[in-house]
Amino acid sequence: MNAVRARVLIAKPGLDGHDRGAKIIAFALRDAGCEVIYLGLRSTAAEIISAATSEDVDVIGISLLSGAHLFLTSELIEERDRHSLQRVPIVLGGIIPPRDIEVLLGLGVAAVFPAGTNLPVIVQRVIDLASERRIDAP
Image (tube, rainbow, N blue to C red; front, side):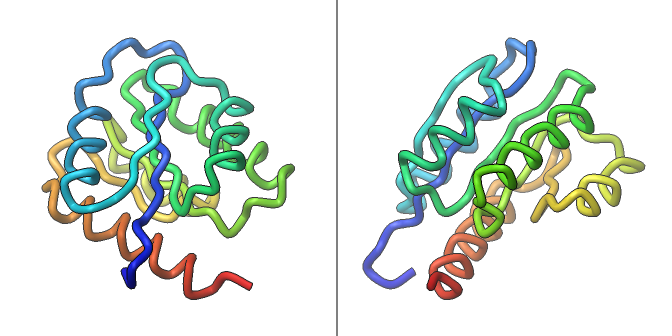
């Protein structure tokens, strides 16, 4: 990705208190050369988008295990669009039922990684999305 490292925000919206998966992804991205901003547990959509703006991130990564993925993702995308950050892709990972993947993609999510997705696949897709965003930057 040229000489510039991808900047990736990782967050856990909602009330879910399990962050092991989010931390594993954050470490894998860091080990792959990305700069990772980890917001931790129980971030609101407004907090996530505020951090994405102030940190000038290339990708927003969300970990969801609570079953509220459709609601929380819709809320996050609305907040992102309200702040004119449509060019910042959102990726999701966690416990996502297969029937909801197409719905999430239709909402505007760039990629969905259900539980069990191989780490190298996730890391490469996030880096690719960050690269695409930088290439498309005005």
